[in-house]
Length: 144
Image (cartoon, rainbow, N blue to C red):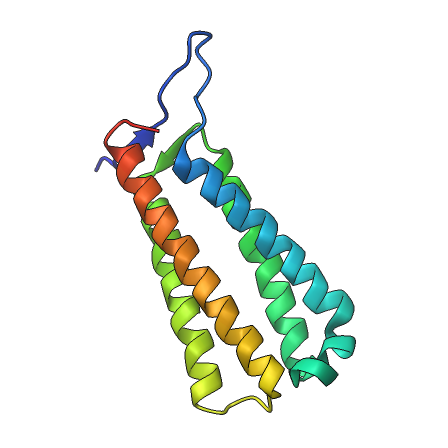
């Protein structure tokens, strides 16, 4: 069984040229890493203004560190497998939906600012998924 892969356009010196998918994956990886560190290091501080219990911020932070590592590895592949790219898109879409559900289902004792913060995060995650999908399509077609 052959897994379809996407190859980056080559430059004159034979190195992969920058591609939208790779760039968005790296931005996603770094922003996920930073936010995961913030949740872990400042979880107790954030619980007041956001209403996010520390018992939630620590597991979220750890999960985000793992996600950031996975995104960084995927972005670093010389040829990004199509299945991995689409898995990232699907994962981000599911994450965005989960964040919205957490706020509307009132599962967390979020403050008003916390609700806005989480919903804004959901929008950012979905926009990232959309950009990754556009990057995937361009990458698959052989463009940047």
